Figure 1 (cartoon, rainbow, N blue to C red):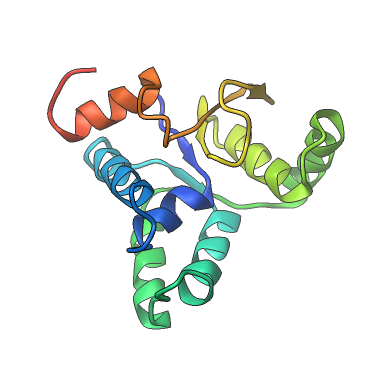
Figure 2: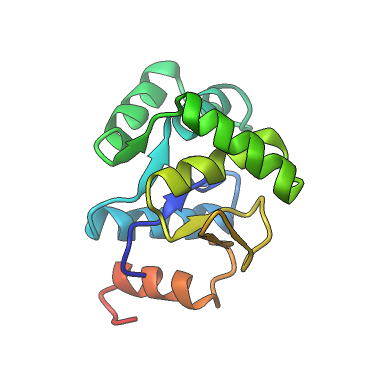
Amino acid sequence: MSAKPFLDTNVLLYAYDRQAEPRRSTAAALLRALWQGGGGILSTQVLQEFYVNVTRKIPSPLPPASARAIVDHYCTWQVERNDCDTVLRAAEIQQRHQLSFWDALIVAAAAQGAAETLLSEDLNSGQVIAGVRIVNPFRTNDPDVCALLGHATGESG
């Protein structure tokens, strides 16, 4: 993968949920690889959803101060802000592709950020929506995922 991928909330969340094996290990390895490669793309929605879920919804929630520090850390990545244009584009994507509005907003933010790929287990892997290809990061045999994980271990991919 040459361009930075956009990450859906679930990738971040699994990395910090100790009871989510084996997805936790895969998500943590992907995030390490992205940090080594210059980061990924997130949106304000992803950061908001992550904060709420990591402090309230996982089996062992993080303290709010710890969650804030993690969000602050990821704010050094490219963060797409959802504005009126993003919301309107999401509404079009929702209607055209029969997605939930919130999933469409993730896709719209990924497109806005010029991501070629969106790492998410919530959408159909391999589908291209608004010019962004969906990749399930937990299908570790996917060539894009293998390339990222290979980068994390120093292998070529």
